[in-house]
Length: 145
Image 1 (cartoon, helix red, strand yellow):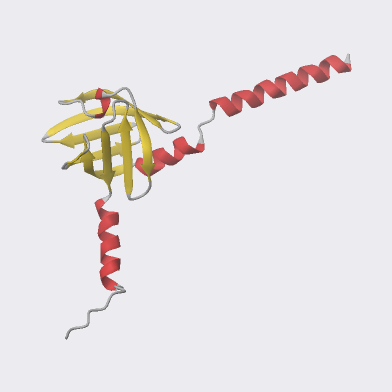
Image 2: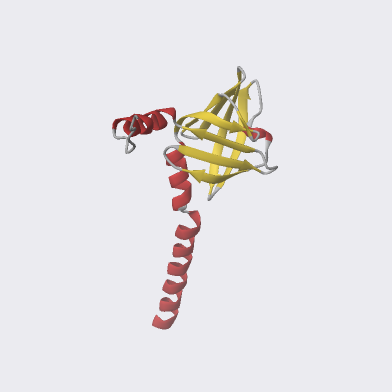
């Protein structure tokens, strides 16, 4: 009788552990969600320099280019971003099946669409601070003749 209970306990423990591992978010998902939050100036759109903004807020995404806006919900699964348009006048990110997050840190991110479109953004505030620091502590010297 105790052998059957032990087997049952092991099976239940294994099943519970499997549920915890499979249902829990991966650290990449949480990391990407955290890093992408906020306002980003667009660096590239459709593999070309462009002017506009991306704003990631909780599970909402706002894209504004050429006086047109897309409002969407987004979900990150590992390194894949999926976007579902819920409003706005244009489809930017939601026009593609998925986006691979190629790079994402606190200053810059790069996305590659299912069809090869490259979109990237940068945080102007972070770049401005880096340039201010480099101007203050320049390691170059000019010697005039």
